[in-house]
Image (cartoon, rainbow, N blue to C red; front, side, top):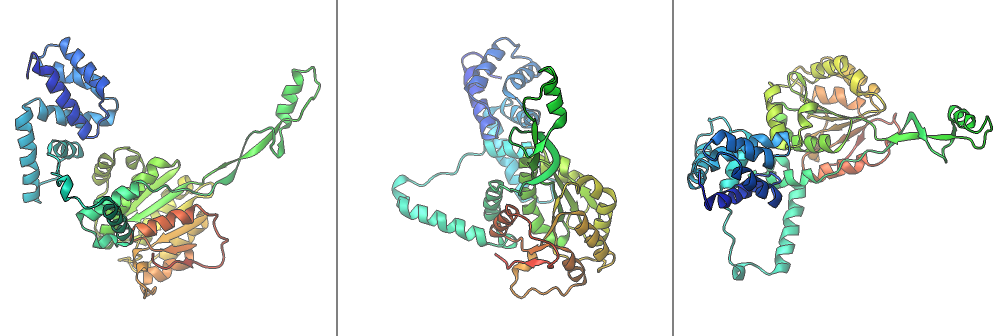
Amino acid sequence: MSSGGQLAANVMQFARLLRRAGLPVGPAETLAAVEALSRLDVGNRGEVRAGLRAVMVHRHEQAEIFDQAFALFWRSPDAARQAAALALLAASAVPEKPRPPPAARRVAEAFAPARARPPEQERPPETLEVALTASERERLQGMDFEAMGAEEIAAAKAEIRRLVLPLDARRTRRTRPDPRGALADLRATLRASLRQGGEILEIARRSRVERPPPLVILCDISGSMQRYAQILLHFLHAVANERERVSVFLFGTRLTNITRQLRHRDAEVAFQMVAHIVPDWSGGTRIGESLARFNRAWSRRVLGQGAVVLLMTDGLDREGARGLAENMDRLHRSSRRLIWLNPLLRWDGFEPKSQGVRAMLPHVDEFRPVHNLASLRALVSLLSRPAPARGAGPIWRDAA
């Protein structure tokens, strides 16, 4: 480690590295780190690491990123930058090598130098740049997820994180004190009269509590849904972190509850946790068996109080339609609103020819496409409106 006058400069460079890696490290943390090192034995690496971690890390999930950055930077700032670049090249040259943890990749990206920007005189006029940006964004809205490259997928994920998913509020059985409420509260009225010697001066009132209903999401992760599921998982992570009472399940050949894993604020860490508990990613599809397990083990826990269910699948079941109609009917009757999101509906000539699609379609309230950003925005707009009356069959929506 450096000592003397270079120590403060190295601490400042280390703080900049942590900011590039996503940690909220500001001037206060930098000054605290310099003050901490002045009181520690800088020759003891473990003591220095513990001291800097105590003053620069504020959340438990940031500790892994800090440890990766500390191990690289304080070994040698210049050598660490070269090692990070070599690690990125090695990872791209050998695809069979397991991916590094999210913290290591984020620290490596923070070490990497920024792309050189073109000179100011070579940049196009500002008006042309704005028009080009708007055109690219409009093109991205209508591009199919399956046709996107790496850059388009990254931009789509950033757009998905900005989506807000509302649900129309629903009156519950719970009440709360409200002087203008429609319900008379006799118990509160009598309690208040005891403080006045038994004289009733006013009638206490209450009103019904309104809150959005629970949201339950069942997402297909089979081979035919692989590309869509990878992007939809970012949408599910954003929804699970922005709303209360959200339950998320993945299914292929089996059913997996990933609600707790998606609650992690860091998307990369959440997806790594999901990968550890989901054994059937990109495998076969057993929709009927997965729905049967959901109805047996989870429906009574998560489908109360008028829950809305989003079913994301293409309806292609390897078991045909065995048990699918019965389990779809039970799921439909247990929920207030069942919306089927199918990427195959993007085709103009789509017809429900497969056995699975024909078995499922009579038991849904809405049948919509989910293949691009425009379809996700249409879904957000749909859920912000009151639910239509049941009994008229599934409502189809053309592909966006």
